[in-house]
Image (cartoon, rainbow, N blue to C red; front, side, top):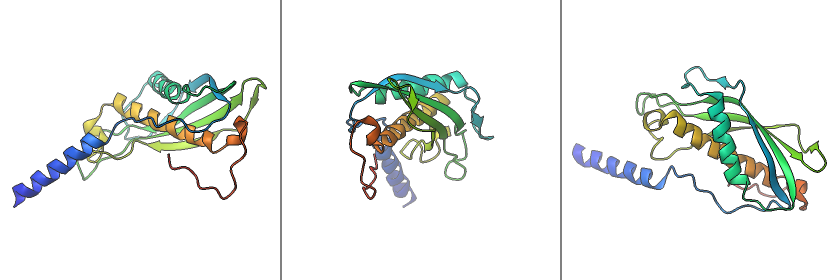
Amino acid sequence: MIIARLTAISLALGLLTACGGQNVVEAPVELGNFKLGHNIVVADNPQKVPISREADPQDWDDSLTAALDKRLGRYEGDKFYNLGVSVDAYALAPPGIPLVLSPKSALVVTATLWDDALGKKMNEGEQFTVFEGIDGDTMIGSGLTRTAEEQMERLSFNAAKRIERWLSENPEWFGLPPKPKNAPVSSK
């Protein structure tokens, strides 16, 4: 009976691993005249949660810049917007004790959007906290199944996705009509 249960659990975790953990980029959302100009990431002095693995600030800069380029560089509007993102804090899960102590990774960033032609800020800075997400690799703790670099890549992907959603929540910045006050917010 115990062997049958362990087999069932192993199969379920295998299916979760096969289905989850991929950095899937959905179709672009409507961003009107948006075209990514400068993509500036600053990771000079991010706060590190005490139990976190170490991460070089340049690695955060490279990882997040690449994720933002990939996600937002696909828009072909006719007006350039510059994005400034600071890495404020992070936690990269260290190895733990499966199912007992399995810390999760997190990233805190602040994004500022600039209208390139006008040279003016569109906002005063919007802060986001993103997590790695739960899939077959992270269910028992991503510190056991992923390297620090893999965790950074996943967090950068999720931050870029969250910033894209934030941009879509402000269509008036991109020559589109504002969203109605009671419009449901996209879950993408």
